[in-house]
Image (cartoon, rainbow, N blue to C red; front, side, top):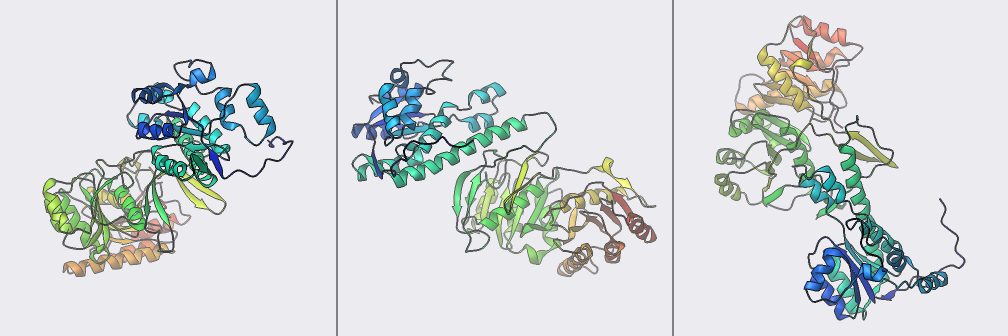
Amino acid sequence: MTAPSRKTAPALAPDLVPVKRALISVSDKTGLTDFAKALAAYGIEILSTGGTAKTLREAGIAIKDVSEWTGFPEIMDGRVKTLHPKVHGGILARRDEDTHVAAMKDHDIGGIDLVVVSLYPFEATVAAGADFAACIENIDIGGPAMIRASAKNHDFVTIVTGAADYNAVLENLNSHNGSTTLALRRKLAAKAFSLTSYYDSRISNWLRSSDDEPAVMPTHITFGGTLKQTLRYGENPHQSSALYVDGSNRPGVATAKQIQGKELSYNNLNDTDAAYELVAEFEEPTVAIIKHANPCGVASAKSMSGAYQLALRCDPVSAFGGIIALNRTLDAATASEITKIFSEVIIAPAIDDNALPILAKKANVRVLVTGALPDPAAKRLMPRPVAGGLLVQDCDFGRIGKADLTVVTKRTPTEKELSDLLFAFRVGKHVKSNAIVYARDGATVGIGAGQMSRVDSCRIAAWKAGEAAKAAGLPESLARGSVVASDAFFPFADGLLAAIEAGATAVIQPGGSIRDDEVIAAADAHNLAMVLTGMRHFRH
């Protein structure tokens, strides 16, 4: 749709616009009365609605109800109160456009120069577990309409969408004798459109998640967030970055409470997210040590300290300066083991009081507490920018159990091998492709990640297992007697032969190669047990 033609071109937007009348309607009353008192001190007339009007009157601030201003009562339980021409005409009218000024005069519409709106708490209502009807009632309609109208007409109207901007507006008014500057109005307008876009995206995502129909990629899609903190820099010092929260309250790095340590960096946050999502996959006490978003050791055991020691054994060299994630409470015994080497970040659902003084001795280590584990099966959309657009996919919520496996070799895996195969395959889901994971006794013993050739990943993982054995003072490679998992099929038998040479006794892989028969024959020739999952776990 093309914009309507104008009879005359408007003049350039004025820099200074006096504020004579303000409309205030906020759900968040933080700082409200002090701000309104300051506006009243400038002689600004205040229009207000509902609970906001009640709060201001109780504070002794003179206001006029919007219903009195419009000559029309609030109706439909407050659903309709500001959706009126006298409100939107007062906001949208261009003061330099003769036809607009004439329409204001003909219809007795006064100009509104400042609009202060905070939206209904839709996200908080959803997060509190309210029923569907209550969430629907907390979708704001009049608020976004006023925000968008004010932001569109920011040449003449100042829009404020939260208490964080009260001081900036008051400083602007104070510096310019009751007027606001175009620079401030434009800055606040940009912020306002970002807010309404985000607000609508949260509603859209919630409605889509409430749909029982099979997931279908929407025709239009938005992803939004609220700034939590700016970061020192991005992956490299010449890149700027920030952390945003998306309102989903998924337990993890973005919503965690930091209880000690230096400021988190972009890389810290990225790696910690990878670590915590990995340990959430396991029901048993599990520890993952992550470096550059790849695990260098993962283990499950009866105790957290036992799991940590096994995870560390896999690659103690790479573990230095790594990220440590736990899926159980961090206790004093585990804290004592962890603090023996340098770590960047420790993240856990909870921390025992006895562990706190132990961690405090390593004051620079960043310690995060989440309160809960994320649900690895929860469906959510994952965006990734590409030139000119976004790639969007469901998260990889696929999980494989014993019932999903198909034995394709003459030898069937033992129960112990089967347990380790499932463990290794679940870890492999969190390793960058091409991914190879050797595991034994519920712990990784060698990991090959991110190689262009799968056979190279097999060899690197086997070499890591040998190095780990040397570091532990063991006579043979940790890969000997282990099982091996591959995140995707073996395109040739060479990768499998490398695993056989390393000492693996069983293998788990998706299958689906045109050379599956060749790979299975190689396994049979060396008495390996092989199971196929029918599901791959590429991770790029």
